[in-house]
Image (cartoon, rainbow, N blue to C red; front, top):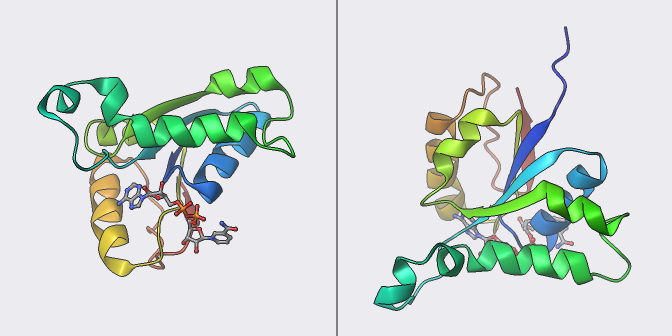
Length: 137
Ligand SMILES: NC(=O)c1ccc[n+]([C@@H]2O[C@H](COP(=O)([O-])OP(=O)(O)OC[C@H]3O[C@@H](n4cnc5c(N)ncnc54)[C@H](O)[C@@H]3O)[C@@H](O)[C@H]2O)c1
């Protein structure tokens, strides 16, 4: 029996990640869009969720404003929530699909994948290539 994808997470909220998140939302899928916590936050910002999620929020904002449109209907953006890979990794346990869309270097990709796999119910093998890729369980 095939399991429907109802919730997904996208790690990396850049050009690819925010676009992928928008297309998943276009298909009616709830998406958690995650990025790193911005470096060099002030002490006050380090305790502020909005500041910690700034990169992911910026990616979502760019997708909302993208021309040609990334979201087929503006209200689909409500299906996308934002987070970061330090505070929200455990949320991957509740999604059906994880898409990684970060930079093509083994070092940043490998720890992210290992942490994600620890937090996730995924049974499929995690992609070994650091390129944008998806793992369906
Ligand atoms: N942009 C394209 O047209 C395109 C096309 C095909 C493939 N790709 C591939 O997709 C991947 C992403 O490309 P892009 O253009 O979106 O890059 P980008 O630089 O626009 O975005 C990358 C994002 O990943 C985030 N990031 C970096 N390390 C992270 C980590 N450890 N955890 C979470 N987030 C992290 C960065 O902060 C950034 O927001 C690359 O591997 C690229 O080669 C891009």
